[in-house]
Length: 283
Image (tube, rainbow, N blue to C red; front, top):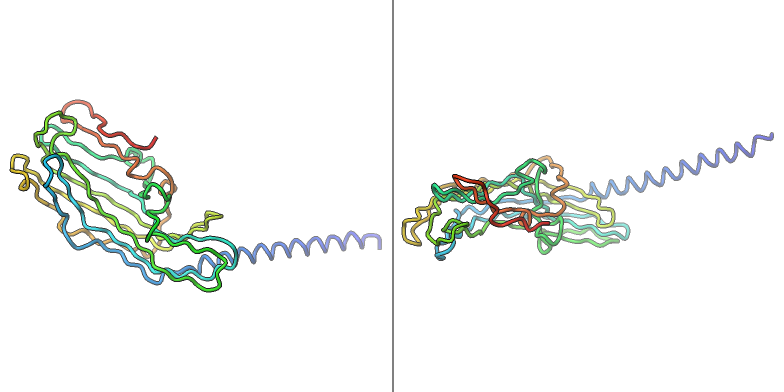
């Protein structure tokens, strides 16, 4: 039977291929089982039920402080069977921003995110600017280094609010005379709870939260300092939505630049061409 050796090798080759496929499938299944075993025991999201506070202590700028958005989660990670590192934490991106400071008939200044405004990106990272893509690197993340014999249970939390300064005078004027007449701000964010493998960059979205911060302040610049500004709306913010179905994370939410570095302060006069007052920090 001259063909026997060749047939044997063929059978052996098929067996080896099937064995290798079984190993690969086993590894893939174990990885999938691990990913699906990461669970969120509890998640909370809220905005403090207090109005935005206004500070007129400075003769140069008006300051305001919005209530805090807060998110926290208790996460359970199963034992990690091999030498690998996972990070669980919060990633946040801004998907909409309107931020206008009106100066009567002279015009308005506005903080703008050009790529977001022009529709070039769906959202922009709101990372701390150091620990991309994470919102922060203290209470906002937890690192688990494998192998581990036991499951890991931990809490992670984050908070966010606005505390800007707005000049009483027109920002492109040499005059110090107060001309500010109103402030309008409306921003929307998506916040994801994510687990990622540091070696493979594999990312598992565990939870998605959507929230919005709005405010309107009316200013009478002719009144004495300390009596000029009044909060108009809203006195209480809409509470965040914890989604029942996760949304995908846009690639632009995971990389530089973050919103703080990308934003531009523009002066838009009632008459004439707009001017860049403060350019983007990102080059």
